[in-house]
Image (cartoon, rainbow, N blue to C red; front, side):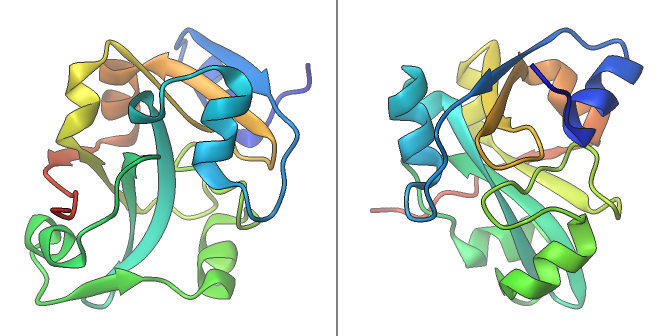
Length: 156
């Protein structure tokens, strides 16, 4: 299986990981990836690029969760936040929407990881290419990305 910039970053850091592939479709998202790969949605994380104040950041939330812009803003120390424009996210990360990952991103953006990730020793997220998912130890991901762990989920 071919490497992505994300898996290259993991390999160079000496972090054990497992690369998985699925048939990407534009409207499927992280829930489709979880279903296709047999991963529970709570353990499959979306890599969202958001604007917190004047800064672009990564917000990692479970596939079955909705990001709370207010909670992200608080975690980032900003007055407000919201999802970044897709073109802006692609320019900043060097990845296409549907393949965005905090691993190997063109620009090093601050990473915010939802607290639900701590429930699992290993989580899955985009590896940096459409149809490519990487499974990695939660602690290793947090350490490599310098993630701030915070409650980011909107209350249903």
